[in-house]
Amino acid sequence: MSTHAQQQAAQDWQRWHEERTAVVAAPYGPLSLTGTHWLADYPEGRIPAVPGRWRERDGAPVLEAGPADGLTVGGEPFAGEVRLAADRGPIGASRVAHGARRLVVLSREGLWAVRVFDPDAPARRAFRAIGATPYDPRWAVPGTFRPYGESRTVRVENADGVARGLGLSGELAFELAGARHTLRAAVEPDGSLWAVFADATSGDTSYRFRFLRPAAPDEDGAVTVDFNRALLPPCAFADHFICPFPPPGNTLPVTVEAGERQRIDG
Picture 1: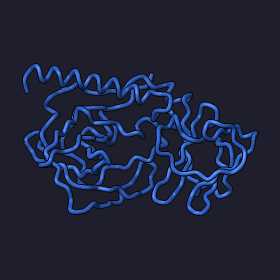
Picture 2: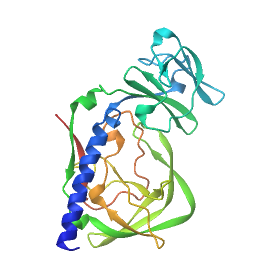
Picture 3: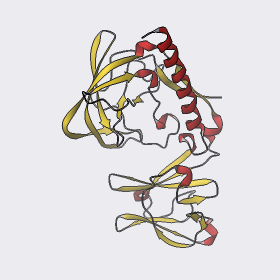
Picture 4: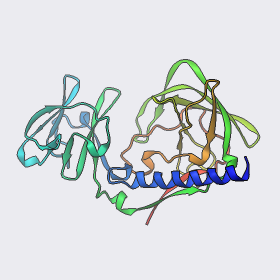
């Protein structure tokens, strides 16, 4: 890579890092999550600190509320009963709200939950920065994505201690420190890749695992594997996320001193 190209890549990385920090610190970013409440844990439908009654009926969550609960649905004061679906859009535009808080409906493997996002969350107030290593061209390497014949699902532990299925679409092959490595990865709806990985820094000088999101491979499977853009998972910002741990084979025996490393509070 030429000197000019390296300078441009470093500038692009700095912009990416600043934008990433802004997204994390936004009013309804990951720092604002104060709870993930599984409806199965509350058979009577009463979730502590969450107004209304939330119960599953015929495979979907149903919310019952009165005027005193202070809820809005679709931006209008709500009293009565409404059948809900999983929220797919931006958190700030979620259908159910309680003042500034957003109550987001979540579904995982047939189980329903309500997530609470609060702009006044303690984690958001304490946050100062994302600790990250400055751009280094040595950590951006050519790779090849080799898709499986068909998608596979493996059971992996999640950050909340529950094992869940993790869908995998193929292997990402690349070379680091003179050795060949692979990461098992999923393909996102836009064609980009997503891998959960750990390395020799994990749990020491970086968070216990991180995410990698390479762009979509070309027709031959070629893709740039850029660890400068390794991401902290959402559970590094709030304890109530259920991030998957790395699947078998995704712990690299390499010290990856690149990308996002730790959340910094003040």
